[in-house]
Image 1: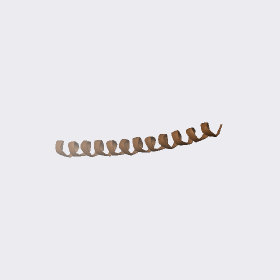
Image 2 (image 1 turned 90 degrees about the vertical axis):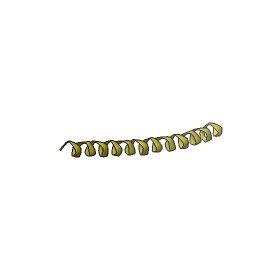
Image 3 (image 1 turned 60 degrees about the vertical axis):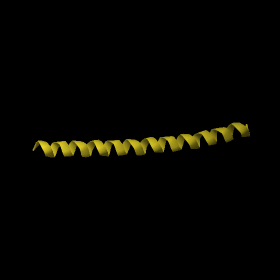
Length: 45
């Protein structure tokens, strides 16, 4: 039972890091897209 808990804690730690990385990349992509749309919008005016 202890081995299973240790394995689950290690895998949950890895999963938490992966989820945090996905969130950071997603926020960066959205900000980049918003900046590109704003730049395109100002060019068309």
